[in-house]
Image (cartoon, rainbow, N blue to C red; front, side):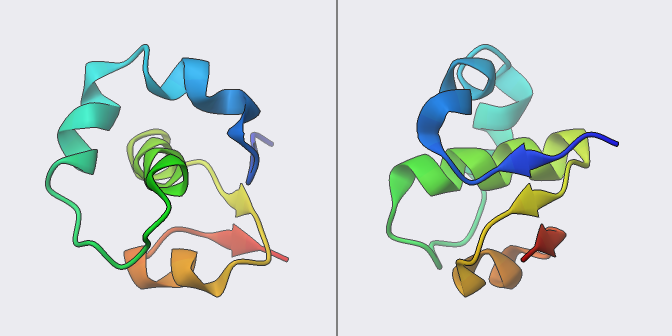
Length: 66
């Protein structure tokens, strides 16, 4: 099982794929943290659940564990 942890250590992967940027630029602005926005875009594109206590992720329809 692949999981995405809510930490900023995975940003190198997000910035390396233009599909993530394409989703990021069309997402609604529910979350003010730009780094979390990148993680959300990655989770949407890759279909990866996010491990986070941040309930703001739920507004984007990603699977959040915690």
